Image 1 (spheres, rainbow, N blue to C red):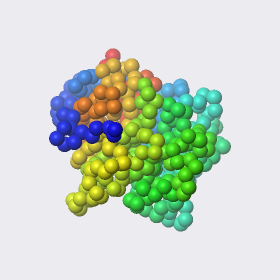
Image 2: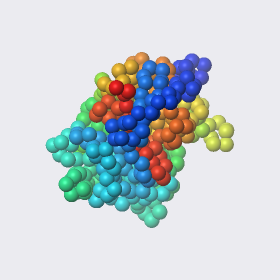
Image 3: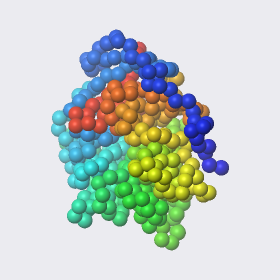
Image 4: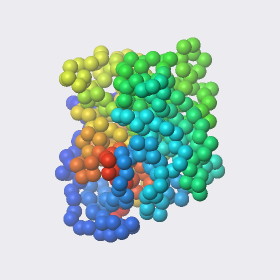
Length: 389
């Protein structure tokens, strides 16, 4: 049975920004000396502190074992934040990107074996065929002493090459099964999401070295790319692994409405563009409706669209009441959505920090249990949501 979809009639209650995030006026000095304000939400009181600014459209961050973090800037720079300071020097050795439209240097992943291997993963829009590009994932060794990447190896190219400037997907995760999961957008060319000879509009599953797992659902099928784990996605820009089950969850942009939260299931077809809870941008219906036999229903959807980007399933110790909740950044509504979970069901949505920080691009649970956000702007910021004591 597919997961039950909260329809508008039965949707979980949604709380207003006023009820969800009542600002207190006190300011206190944060750990880096910056001013910190305090916010009262429904279940937790937390502090909001800007740790760094001056980032050029940051897209992703990933923590290293010692608490430092790598941050990508869409224009093609990889930065290091360590000891409370953003290093002004870009890290050398990052592959070239096509930084046009939504393309550029996108996700960064520090895998569990980093301490032994020094490996990191990057996703990016790889320039190809003149004005074309495709989502590419590379693995490299981060040489911190040299402030550089070395041994850069291509793990996968989501081909064929596209000639638009949008919908690269590009989130990365290591699942509980130890496999590398990659989301790819359909590049704004809708039929590609259903084409099994095409890696666009898919969730890919690979061994960490880029080889194909023997138990991938389409291995051995004629005229099907064996990297494909699931299909029928539009532009998935949020992904995380459930800390209890090891299962991969992801969310994706809908068109005009219909942003979706999904569980990644082997062989599943998430329906784009055949079914959707969204509309064409001119307001007309699209596809064949909201459901069709054999096509996966989302766990949850947003209508109107919040333009989700960035996601974490919270498992930290700093906020006990939030354990197991899913946090999603929103670009359009400029907020942080907290989805209260009961198993695999969303039972409530709380909207935090509406219009307080700007477009929230990345959401990560830090090693200290705080939530770390990146804001998507020419003067982007690294922000920490921490406990009050």
